Amino acid sequence: MTVLTVEPASAGARLDRWLTERFTVLSRARLQTLIRGGLVRVDGVVLKAAHRLRGGETVEIEIPPPAAEELVPEPTALSVVYEDDHILVVDKPAGMVVHPGAGRAHGTLAAAVLAHAPTIAGVGGPRRPGIVHRLDKDTSGLLVVAKTQAAYDELVAQLAARTVTRRYLAVVHGRVRAGEGIVNAPIGRHPRDRVKMAVRPAGRGKRAVTRYRVLERFAHFTLLELYLETGRTHQIRVHLASIGHPVVGDQVYGKARLRPPVVLDDGYALHATGLKFVHPVFRKVVEYAALVPERIERLLTHLRDSP
Image (cartoon, rainbow, N blue to C red; front, side, top):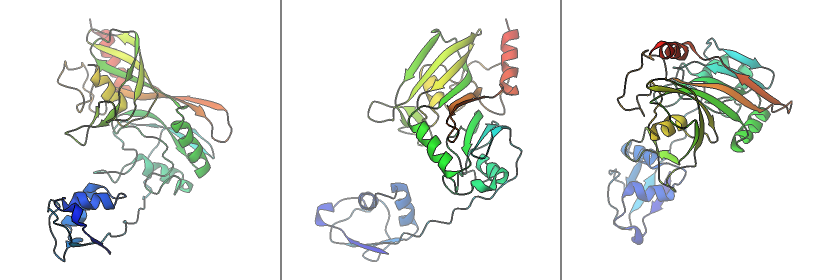
């Protein structure tokens, strides 16, 4: 248990804000949970997070140890594109979450990978063993997984240096006029909906750059090839929606528009189709490709057959 004294200068501060300034390793939401759970007392009394301090009080806070993190292997069929003793490249299906998170503890790619290669346990982290980068649940395509800590560290460094090439295909609403372009707009948490991301003003989001090229135009839709220079959460979906061309099937960032001729009930029309990087051990450039999944091929066939 930690015991603190509220200094007179902090009179009038909210309890949760005051604690946030002193326990910087804990989020404000986490501290509010501790307050609600009765693990914070002011002069021996459990109060609300919004309680205003007056100065001079004694604040006791009990921070329980984090729960043991253990990912249980779940044998699941994987589409393995390449594998050796150091890396594993898989083609993730739409609908599969990459690693456990809020609201999804089972059926993850991480658990399937752990069952496929048990020696990955502990590489990079206990809840996301070997996972170097991720894809959204309803986005399909290529992911590289590190099978050793050395491979993990090297691949993370390549991602940080932006030397990994990630190529995507997307079918978007509307006819994109320019043959190619760049969306360079910072991305951060949505100011009102904390579950969503959004393009934010300079200084309020992280740098995000997406390059795109038109592959095919249809009456009301466009097939794009995209490359990521950065890897922000929901980056492609947010950037394309910001220029008025949301990904088909994306109900989060796409507004009500013309319905596509094929209902995508198993994912967005977004697929990570290409991946290129330097092999972390063999030190040669390797490149992998994934076929366009049936749901997107079905959509493209209908669009090509439509007048």
